[in-house]
Image: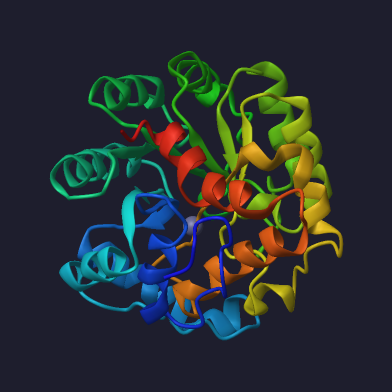
Length: 306
Ligand SMILES: [Zn+2]
């Protein structure tokens, strides 16, 4: 076990993660960006990733393709004490039943927090309000998969409700890994302009518009970045971080949260942690306080974990 003033060598494999986390002086990891779905839906998502070569031009073998109990066991063995199991619709008429499933899953699964999603459709405001009343502690909005405009008037009041509630919403609005008609941080910046109090977590740190994402964090007090899939070898091939990324994080060190995309990643979970640990180690103004904040304190605060 390492002392808690030095993070020690980052975990080289998942087997080393729990011991490494214990040495950081935090009660565990809090992962703000994971995916759980009804089994049947998840299998469809996995089928899609099986064809990633055609969709993305890159092979994407799902690393944690296990049944649900096994996936939960893996998270536990990695020292994840809390996680946001995110859901998102790709068509109308889907969000409301996904929300019912995600609330139930979050309320009944150890470590999971209740989450919800939304889509521009009549009734969106009502089911968002209902999800907030039902205890949703995190929302997910996926602009690329949903193929919708986040500025759609049908969502305007829903964004307002989220801002009022101060409940974080993980927004996949960047161009990576695929462009969509309404992806791009400039589009989402207009939503922030209308709802400046929104607690918005830019998924994948805005990949590949990392510069613009950092600007939005500086501009709006409620904007955060998640680490999901950034800085790992897989993504560095097509969306590399700026060379001075660690230094760029110094002024926003308390606005970065751990996200992983577990289980839908094509590499070990340990790699994501090693990437974050690498930023912490390479910049003396980051170091252990940054590592503890990203891996536990900041996401725990956003999700309301005690
Ligand atoms: Zn994701």
